[in-house]
Length: 96
Image (cartoon, rainbow, N blue to C red):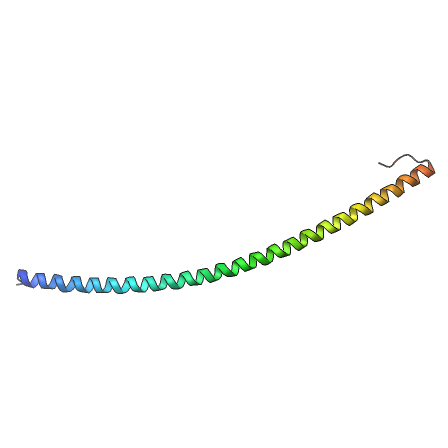
């Protein structure tokens, strides 16, 4: 039969083993979390770069759209003036 001293020594050995394993597990988890964090930061950096590139492209597209709209607006106004002049010269009722 086990004595109290034996049980106490067993508890002490078990406690030491559990603490040792817990410490090892904690260190492993901390290392894995660090690596995961580094990987996530790299991915976020890449996403930031892609977002910047998209923003630059979007700004270019918006500028191009403004240019196109401005061009066609001027063309439309000139064409409208020509049609109105023709209607007036030919004594036609306005189309619009």
